[in-house]
Image (cartoon, rainbow, N blue to C red):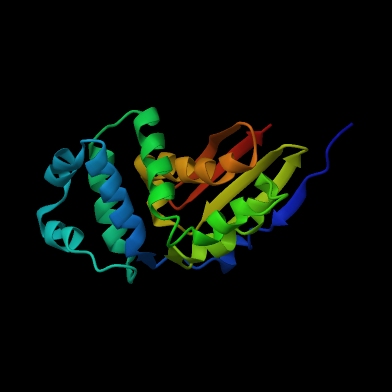
Length: 200
């Protein structure tokens, strides 16, 4: 029997999406910490453009920064040329490092009885708004245990490192609510990305 796609959170019309202009310093700091934990910090720092080094090394905690800070960080990350598994691991680490701040809502949800990946997808706009000012997300259930998740109006989508790392974050968020999960990239553009998700 065919499954009728259900909008969990409808992505707004493209013309109405404002491109993300700010990023929470927590995201960049957690990403840098994950690089340090896995031994990539020195290589990352060598890849940071000189004009950005001081600004990225002295990040105030929990404040909004212009999105250019994230562009500078993920430019350096892309230059590392890490394989997909390493970047996914970094995304998982970022999710863990930010559970007490940006993803505290998700952590509470995980503890609630009956929470499912669909439940998590339903709160993704709230989680997104803790990381970015503007940009938008949407999620659609495409099968009993399948979904499609999109982010739009996000300039970081042009960086493979960010896309794979963000996929790792999404997978880390839904994993506690199922036995196993798979998140794959379907497509991306200069400021958008869409993932296909499945779980059991």
